[in-house]
Length: 208
Image (cartoon, rainbow, N blue to C red; front, side):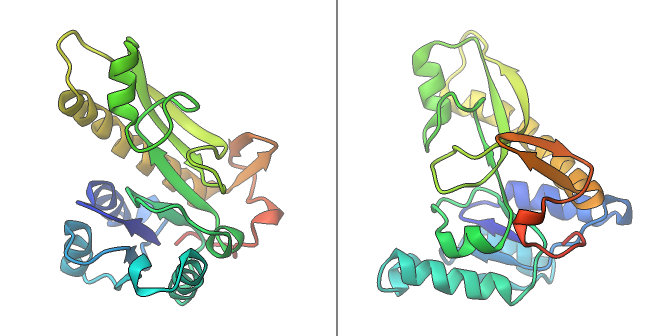
């Protein structure tokens, strides 16, 4: 299951990977928090089930969280990938499914919605991307994998973000593939790929 809010470039990378049986996973559905986005169009062109659950259609975040949980649960995913999904997930969703997210910085540095801009403003010479498990905080979940990206002289937010996104897509595909093929375990804040899924996740076996 993949959640999107925008263009769906990470979704496309996962769809391309899943077309190869060796990847070991299938995308069972795509969910969004808004209509009219390219991410949904990508899903529909690929004949994937797609749905929209808007915050504004519900009386508060708790009701939205419950509605989103119900729509996700209907597809029985083993793993949920937040691929540019720009909403903070609530306790119903996070309590039911393991969720993976990508972030365009080397967490815990520069969390939040403006990570690339913040990294440039700070003057770092190296930034990058992080794939992490999602918890109740903002970009605070345990890190699964990271990859560095150098900041070049003359970079602006757009040029740096584009290079980060190229690395981010490859890293996300690699991590999701390894998780669904080999499982994972979590000890404190340390995530180890391989060795089986943590019993506390409550997720069924498989790789969808």
